Length: 83
Length: 445
Image (cartoon, rainbow over all chains, first blue to last red):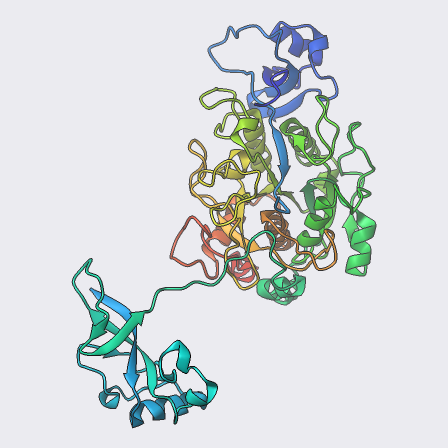
């Protein structure tokens, strides 16, 4: 199972990339729950979509019909040499 | 139904003459005078092979010359009823099975098959170079464990192009870009960097050590988290698309020799936030955005091929997953320098939910190259095939105008391949083994 303690969430940025505070407000979680070292990463700026990494346990059910997460953050490994 | 058999015929002049001619390099048989019953259709292009007395006890060398042999093996076909068992004899002549055989397939622990020079020859790098397609003013981002520039310089005999400023300098990085040890456990990135330069020796390397970071949630040294890749791609998008340092290049190619090996590393099947089968996962959305911005993204198919999968694989079908199966990327299977698919190369179709016709193409792997895993050890896995492919893309991008999208370039590679076993797409090779010169020519280069 992927680490469920940290997940990815998609947030909106109507005036460019949102700040972490904006993201926390959208997700209704304390800013301390956001991974500041990850920051806010663009996903599709034309669609005003950005992503943040946050603790999963304080997330509330989404109010929007559009799914915004939580999305997994699975482990990745090199495709060689063979084990 | 026609069945291939090997028949054993008693000696006569026609058989002796055929066997003697074979020693001189001629492949023929006088089928009219070979002494076979009419129910055996002899192959006139297969010589009679002396087999002595045709028993294990009568195989002395001096009994197996064309003149001394009592029996000769010939190739033939017989007609039998569909599903029937072939007879032991046909009109008194003993027959034996002639089953289809295939070459031994290259697997993970096998020694290298050829070397980097053989790969360069197979790719016809001299012709690419003659066209001026050498990767000049093209950046190759190696999304991996980090690489070691000094090792590459020693191995190559000269220092390759390297752009530290536009590499990834995240606070979570363990070493400076280009200085990751070419030793366990971070040598994988150095292998990838080496292989990317085979077709594009003038390309500029960018170091994105996404697999070596100590992630906020604690990644191990040779595994990372997808969020690291997401962050790195975000930097590429910003730098390339918003007039940052990468905008100074003619093109940027990103090489990705990594994957999610087990479905259990991800959210459960059916979860809307799952990665491996979900085009709407943020990373898959960002890959689409980066490609739309004009960056070429190349992914390894993975090492879960049915013949000899990596021990980390949970299954051997539907194993091309996540961004490795993204519709906008070029997904690369692996073959050895003889053109034979390596047995560990993941086969299509990809996981349900993602683009199905993956891999796209096949490139070379399992050759003696960087030797970063030890003297005589191959550059292996689809991990090596991916940067070989990325180098070919970089070479072609050398003389292409900016703004030509990835699909045009990738489409040329898909449409102009060498051997692939079958026409069109197939699960082992995709559209076939790459032919970069033909792809370049088709693009007017």
